[in-house]
Length: 439
Image (cartoon, rainbow, N blue to C red; front, side, top):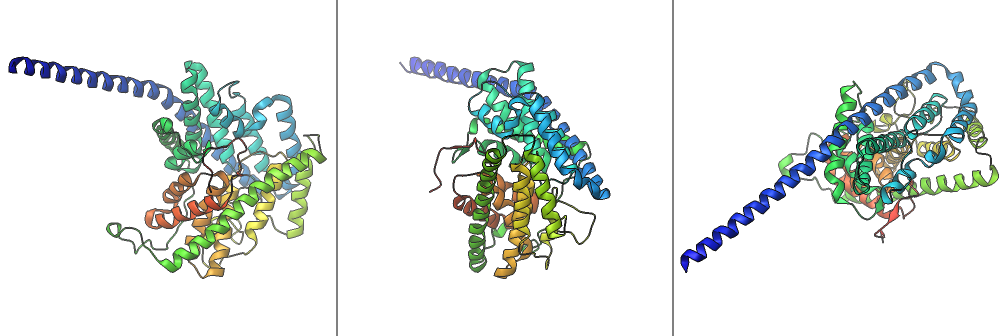
């Protein structure tokens, strides 16, 4: 009887080992299948992002060297609209089309989306439009991923994940934040829910895309937050100051309200422009004239373009808000107005980098009112306004750590989460779906 029992146990153990080996083999095969598709796709997206950033830097320099280019903004907007009207098709929907395709794969993402958004964004920045770059990188990533999916004959079940990986690669490469890029692709689709089945492909794509972009010689902007940098000891964990924490929470409420103001104003003005001016070719012309009028009214060009750098030392840039004593109370409002007009009237680009400017400017202004560290509050606004506008608090908390360091990780996370909770459900992406209400 004992011999029979041992034999049964041996057979059971042997069958268990066989099952585990088969499972491991299937897992290795699954990983290899994805590697063969993700690596070339992510490298292509990273290369495209590198070319885009290089082009963006050159046209920005041209705009500063030739100030008269600003007066071509209405014409530039007309050309962008004409290009999309003639050959754009459904590419006009931009990032929202990508989100819809990931939710319900159907008509596919046009391959022409990548060159169209690249040319449209370059032309917008050459003439001085206040736009960003994330929309361009994300759309190029999705378009390139869709092309690879067709080339590899990826089944519909895997197409959704490949598109998400393309978004992750584009976002991670353009900002130099691969962890944030991976989580952004997972988080941006649905408010309140993350789809973990795409976690590993998105992370791999974001890492490879960022590595490829940097291998081309692209250097990403880094921001210095000195607060607590030399005080925190890793073994002691998060620094906690109740008084400062209260100020952070109050500021984060303002960040959330600012984000929802931006999103609602963009959607409202877009609707109004379509009602008042049904001709899509004329809307960016009107927007360009409005931007020119604002420039002359304010007597400054500081709120044009990305706002990342300027050859003029006295100009406001994102980096300048991290410097003590450089707080301008209403800079955030003017950048918000310039960006809403630019994007709602039909110019191309993204919202994120202007949101960085808006958030950093608002954080800097609030730090002066609250008697708080200027560089810390600029960093908090930088990520929290974007977190609330895009409804991606986890991705933005990671972005803050990647850009500013982990010594203020607790404050960064609190700012992103509170701003997200206070911003409502209206975000910058109309195709975003609601799974779990915030309140």
